[in-house]
Length: 440
Image (cartoon, rainbow, N blue to C red):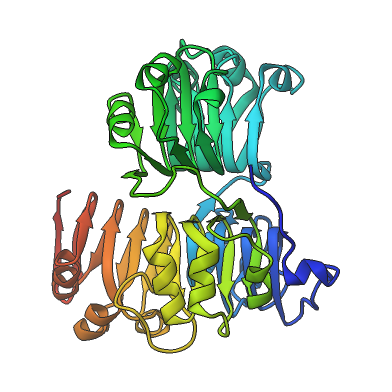
C-alpha cells in the first residue's frame, strides 16, 4: 500500500494560493481559477461559457480536462500543455477522483439506478458484482486509469463503458483476487496463506523470494497479471509468464541480491516537489509512483536521488533538470505520462504530448508554442493551417498517432506520414486539392 508523505506545501498548512490571475492546484478543480491554470488531477470546465474559456491564456494539466460541447471548440484554441486527455462530457456526469477504489456488490445495491460517473484512479470491480447489477446502476461509466473487471461485467457494460488507460480482464470464475499496488515480497509463508487458484494482479513491484518452492507457486497462483515489475529467480518468472494473460510491465531476473526490497512505496496523486529534504526523509531503495505532477528540485544531488528511488512509475507528468530526468527515465518501470526537462532546451523525445479529441486547427502560433519533437495524438478532426511551413512542422512534431481525420495540404500530410501511425484518414484539402486517403 502507498504511504503518504507530506509534501512541503502540505507541511506549511496547505493554504490556497491567490487564484487571480493564475492558479496552481491539485485534485479536482471546477471552473476557471485564473487566466493561467496549472493543475495535477481533473480540470472541470463544463458549464463555463465559451467566451470565458477563450480568455484563458495557458493551461498545464497532468490528468484530465472536462469540456462540454458548447465550449470544446474554444478550448481547442487555448495554448495548453497536457499529459492526459481532453474529454467532452455531459454536465450531469459526476466525477470521483480516488487513487484506489474497490467496487463491491453491497456498494452498488445501495446506489440508485442510471448513474453517470467518471472515476479517476485504479478501479476494481470485485468478482462478486453481478454484471446485470452494474448495467442497471450505471448509465454512463468512464474510467481514467486502470480498470479490473470480469469478462461478463465488461460485456454487460458494452456501450456504457469508456476507458482511458489500462483494462485487466478477469475470468468470470475468479474466486480470490490479490492486488499488489506497492512493493510486495512473496515468501513461502505469505504465499501459503493464499487460496488455491488465486488471481494475482501486480500494479506495483513484486519480488519473489529465492527459496520459494515452484510447486507452491503453481498451486496458489492460477493467473498472474503484470502491470508493474516482477523480480525473482528465472525458474519462477518462467512459470508466471506462462500464466500471464496481461503483461504490460516487466519480468526481471534478480541478480545477486535477495528478491525482497528494502524501501517502501511512495505515491503522489497530486502535485509534489521532490526536494533534498524530502529525499533525506525517505528510506533507501523506495518505489515511487507518480499519478499527478512531480517536480524534481534543481539542487537535488543525483547520487541521493538514485539511492532513494530504486523504481519509478509515471502515469502523470515529471519535470526536472536534464540529468535527473534521465536518471528517473532509466529507473522507470512503466511510463504512461510525460518526462520533461525544466527550463529551455530539451531532449530529443518525450518533451511534450498533445491530444485532440474534438475539432482543432493547428496553426503556426500553436507550433511555435510547442517544444521540439513533441508527440501528438488525434482522436477527432484536425486541420493543418494552409500557411504552416513544412520545416516548422517537421521540427515540432516528432511522433504522431491519428485515430481520427487530418485535413491539410498534401505537402504537410506528407511530413506527418513519415513519423507516426495512422489508424484514421488523411484528407488533402487546400491549395487547389481535394482528395481522401483511407486508413493505413
